[in-house]
Image 1 (cartoon, helix red, strand yellow):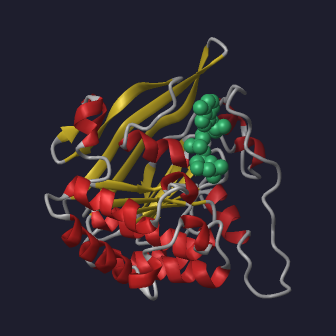
Image 2: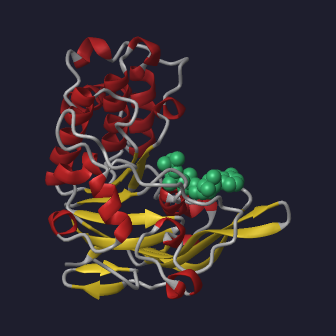
Image 3: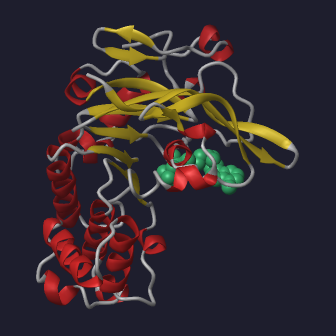
Length: 316
Ligand SMILES: Nc1ncnc2c1ncn2[C@@H]1O[C@H](COP(=O)(O)OP(=O)(O)OP(=O)(O)O)[C@@H](O)[C@H]1O
Ligand SMILES: [Mg+2]
């Protein structure tokens, strides 16, 4: 199958107090049409930076150190701001980590949706209004005709998230990047939004789903990449990853999932080191029970084990 988007050997640095720290280290991702690819890892491991790189929405103090991001025969990293604007929103849309940043509190949903639609389509305001209502209906926002008159603060968290997804769909983007789309929502609404993303994927879109919660993606993702401190440490199809996890970090994430009510969770001991701390060897080795001297001195690279790719000297 031909990938729709590829991140290849990509490294990103951040300058902090005159030093450059590697926030992403030689990462590779391959995304396919009609699939949900989940990027999973603890807070600060570089999930948001990875996808913001695709849209060139990076902080000023960042610097691309190596690699390419391939989309429709172009290296997105080489595009000018003007060129990337033709792709951002139109072909690759972002559902950002903080939904309020993409809704303007001063305008109604109608105004915001119509503006997005008219920006991407050459149609009248009336036609745009119909399309806006259609878009809201397609994300199963109840009573869309009336709800469209609301201001963002009049909507619940789940409704706001649906509106943001509708905006991404209204621009007809092929790829949807959802950065923690359900973190702020309660469990029932979370499941509804994930089901909605699944439906959108079945219509042939590519979805990149970022989450720190492996439990969320268990049911909904096709492919999973596990990140740890700026590195991809394991990559596999979803069912394979849960059946045969190979990296000790992946295993630890699975063991930390709540199984049954009342059953005690196995927390992962310790926490990832800070970006500004130097890393020697495998980034996970300070927390890993299988680690030895090799792990502490040399960075492991992704290698194939069965149907998975794993960066570990002592895989399970
Ligand atoms: N503008 C910035 N300047 C300096 N460091 C930054 C900046 N933005 C992010 N970082 C650091 O870069 C690293 C990766 O951040 P990123 O936001 O990609 O993590 P994440 O995996 O999305 O985490 P979370 O789950 O908390 O959203 C973190 O250590 C973060 O503190
Ligand atoms: Mg993030």
